[in-house]
Image (tube, rainbow, N blue to C red; front, side, top):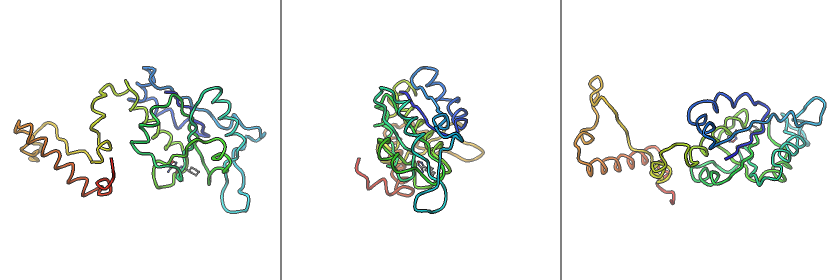
Length: 226
Ligand code: 4GY
C-alpha cells in the first residue's frame, strides 16, 4: 500500500512514522509513505497556499492551484484514491478503514486555516473523511490516524492476522476486561473465574463483561446493525 500525503507541515509525520509498527511495516515493504510539501507546487512567487474567502468572513481558505497540481503530479498514471481530511467528511470507522485497506494507492490532503476552496472537493477529491466531530488545527493528525488504522489491516503488518477478527468494532461490542500477572497486585485481586481453569465459564464471563461495558459506555453500539 502506497500513501502520498500532501501537507504544509511535512515534519509532523516523521516521529510517528519512524516508530513501532508503522516503522516495521515500512521496513518490511508492506507500506510506503511519501510526504509532499504543498508549497513546492505553488506557482505564486510567495508560495501562498491560502487566500481570503469570496463573500467575506473571517480567516483564510486553501487555494485550488497548488492542490490541483500536486495531486495531478503525484497521481501520474496510477488509479489512486484521493482523500481529503476534513471535519465535514464521512466518519472514519473500522468498516471504512477495512475498505480503504483494499486500495493500492491513497493520496491524503491535509488542510489548514478555515477550510478548502470547494472546487478542490468537487474536482480533485474522491472521498472526504473525518476522524471525529471536533475541529483540529490541521489535517495532519487525522492523516496519521487514517494511515495507522489502515496500515494495521494490511496482511503481514501485525503478524497475528486471526486476532483481527474478534476485535471490538468487528462485533459492535467493547473489549472485555483483561488482567495479567500478578494475580494479586498490592492486595488488588483479579476475578476468581480467570484462575478457575474453567474455559466455558471464562468465555461466558468475558461475553457478559463485554456486554455490560458496552451498555454502560457505548449503548449506541448495541443498536447498530453488523
Ligand atoms: N476532525 N477529521 C479533521 C480536522 C482540520 C480547517 C480543514 C477532522 O479530519 N480532519 O479537524 N481537520 C481542519 C482545519 C481546515 C481541516
